[in-house]
Image (cartoon, rainbow, N blue to C red):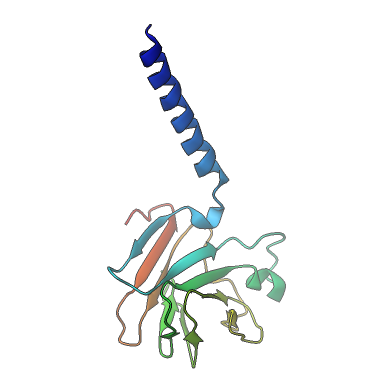
Length: 156
């Protein structure tokens, strides 16, 4: 076997191993199908659909599941009237929220006090399914700006 062949095989093995380690290191929230609308300024960021720790339905557990909405530009984005929904039709409506440039807001399921970085749906039960679901933000005209799916049967 020549030196160049050995070097190519070694490089291929290193790249493959790196890809497997990288995929294994991703949080459960990052596994899924992601579809952003072309040139969308506001997109989905991280999603924590499986509340860490005991999933006992407490407010703490409910707020452990969240969806992050991110403004990718330097200019502020007005999210007033925008919605975030799941596959079952549960919908959260953003009211009077101006998302600063290059910033994110986490939309938690449970009850809490809204801030610039965290808003709360004020729900008493889980929204995001651990098995399969889709998070979809829509602008104030009802147009889908992004979508992310995870779990079985969500191969969009």
